[in-house]
Image: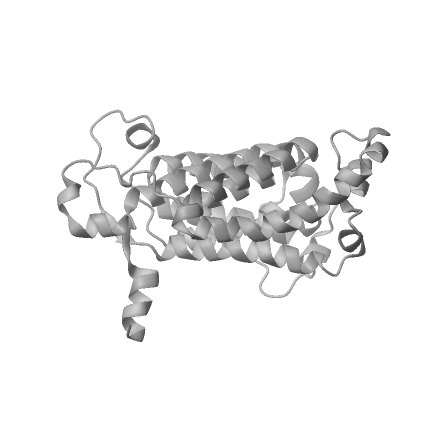
Length: 301
């Protein structure tokens, strides 16, 4: 295969625009949950007289300081920014002015991370990467929750678009899982298998207690099993024949994290929505005469 053909096959192969629409709606929903999660802390973290000194925040990282909270830093202004962002998530989910709304949310995520870097969690970095990828990807704006998820009203004509945005998110999933495992290989508690035991005894656990000591052997096995699962999930998702197994394993894995870990539900939800980049719920289903279109059938593979 010639290099140009290989490039086109990987990045520019056509896919159903509804896949992007589903991912857009899921992303907007998670951002809305993220905003609700931050709402009680917005004044403390983002105002000029909050717990984080503005000058310390602006000099804490490399690059340009682009936080909107450098200008809008009063309690009223921060509240208005959050309300505008909430409206942007709703419009993004509905496909109205989707790209400008996505730009607003990207700026919000960047602003929060720059103004309050100590508050940033793992899902903050994942969300801002997803926002950047989607900002330059097709968004399936004609599809909204009503005609896509509820199947009400007259849906728009089916459309094929390049899949490069989905591929970028798939690669992001690989990087997240495999980099996590690589970083843990040099950690003493992961090497010895003690991580899960210490985690369950810590304040991060939802069910800490003396019961952990009696199950240490099982928890040591779960420590090593966690590493294997994190290596396996992106591989299983990438291969079409094992994709369902990857989805089941990934959802079960992150459900367990959300159940047993405190304040990790949003992280689990963010990771689960990235799995949407691997699936096409509308194939091999046939609809609206598209079964006669060989390009549409090729997009299902």
